[in-house]
Image 1 (cartoon, rainbow, N blue to C red):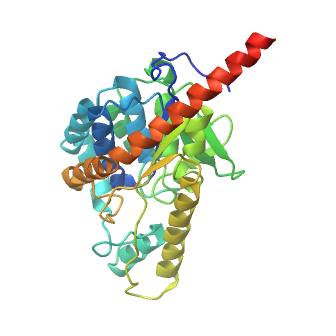
Image 2: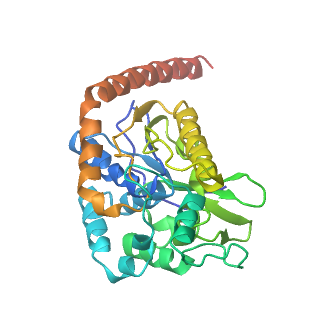
Length: 321
C-alpha cells in the first residue's frame, strides 16, 4: 500500500525512528493521553503512530496536531457536548464495579430488566454508526490521512475473511470508525474491500502496524484488563462474555512481544464506557510512564548505539565497493 504524503519529523540522526502502538480498551484508552504527556515532557519524539480502536482515535488526534494538551482539552469538550449525550454510550453500564462485561452479558442484563432486545432483528449493533462518526468528527480536526503531520495507521479486521486490515491512506474518519466499531455494540463498516470491525479483534496492541509504517523502536501502551472479578452468575451469557475477556487479554499479552518497550498503566479495570473517569485515567498514564522513564531512556540509548554501529558497518561496506 502506498502512503499519502506526510510531514517528515524524524528523530535525531543516529537514533531509531520511534513508533508508538496505542492499544484498544474503550475509555481505558484515555490513559494514552497521560502517556503522551509524559513522553512530551521528557522530549521523547514520536515519529510514527499506530492504533486500534480508542488508540486509533487518540493516535490520529495527536498525529494531526502534535499537541497533547489540545487532545486532552478536546476530549473534555466532547464529554460536555450534545454529540456525546446523544451517542447512547451513557446508557451502557457495567454490571458490577470493576467488571468488563462482553456484549452478551450486557444484553442479558437488559433482558433481566425487562427491556426488549430482539436478537433475531436485522439490526447489526445496539448503537448507530452515524453517532460514532459524529464523535470522531468532533475529536479529529482533519478528514484524510494526507493531512496528518506524522505517519499514522489504524487497524481493523475484515468480518468476512478474518484478516487484519492496516489502513493508512484515504478517508481518515471512515478508517477510525471501522477501527472503533465494537462487535455487537456497533455495526460493521462496509468498504470496497470488505466489512470491517474493531481492530481490537485482531491487533489489540498494534506493534506490527507501527513497524510497517517505519517504527524502528516501538513503544507499546497496553490498556487491557489486568484482572478478572469472580462471576456473580453462571449462565451462557456470562460464560461467553468471560471467554471473550480472557481471549482479548491473552492476545494483548502475546502481541506485547512484538514491541521494544511496554507501558501498562493501571486502567482501573474500568468498563469501556466509563469516560467520566478521564482525570483518573490520564493521571494513571502519566504516572506509569514517569515510573518507567529511566528504563525507557536506557533502552533508547542502547538502540541508538546499535543503530550507529550498524550505520558505520554499512557505510564501510559501501566504501569498499
